[in-house]
Image (cartoon, rainbow, N blue to C red; front, side, top):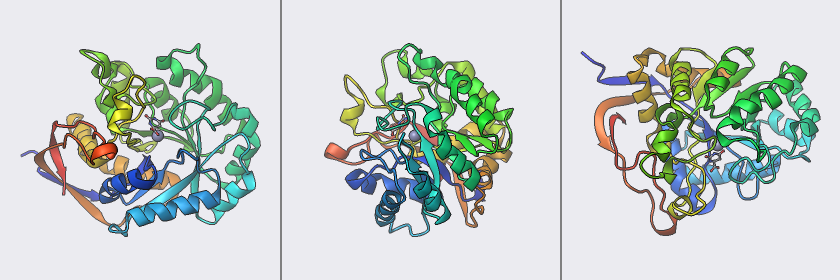
Length: 345
Ligand code: DOR
Ligand code: ZN
């Protein structure tokens, strides 16, 4: 008999965009209902660059999730060329900042204030290394002459390898990896290097986005790559390796901002995140590795306790809503209108 339900330790989401104001209020509960904790990305319109800004943002998230009081947002700071290393490390020591995020300048949404050259912040990264504070990396080069499909692979040799050579003890999460190159790099690096993998990069390749018409709701950064990369990511995620863990990169944008002549990057995957990941593990005959990927590898890497609660998913069909929210706030969830085989209960 095939599996009809699965109960596992409550998962965490190690890469989430919750936005702010009315959008925060609208989307936060979708993450909080499935996950115990979430790493909150700091790329607000005014980036979260200090401990004080992170503490204030955390309060707004807690207000938006007050119906789910067990949910714990884990805050990050947005690295800039002029970031204050003392504030960063103190914020970490005080328990306000879990990690810091490196956006190469102009790599993606709200990254204009990001780092222009990683070498300029080496002293800051050295302080983080000393403090045991994880660095979360958007790993893409941004030069105009580099093809968008090559940007992650090139980042490994131009930035990641020199960085790890200079700081061999730095804890680094290579976020939302999309290539075999990144999966192989992480697998062959030391225990201080790990990666998050989104559900959508396990499920779609660039054809899904571009063949038969352009599908702006499948556009994200790093952009989905060719099939061989998707297969390598599925292998990495379901392998049982402790170096890979769940990070949805759920990134809501208003429908008008996606369906546009210059559409925004980001996929709103929070509503059915666990159902999609579980489908992948089932298809790969690796359900026995699902709990480690979703619930153990992340907290173990971050040196946080695993969650104590459990959650259950049942094998039961459900249709993803066409739209979530109304009017100007309407967002389209990942796989809108499709039938999923699992249901989070
Ligand atoms: O697709 C993406 N959306 N990738 C990112 O790196 C940022 C995110 C967002 O904030 O919209
Ligand atoms: Zn992201």
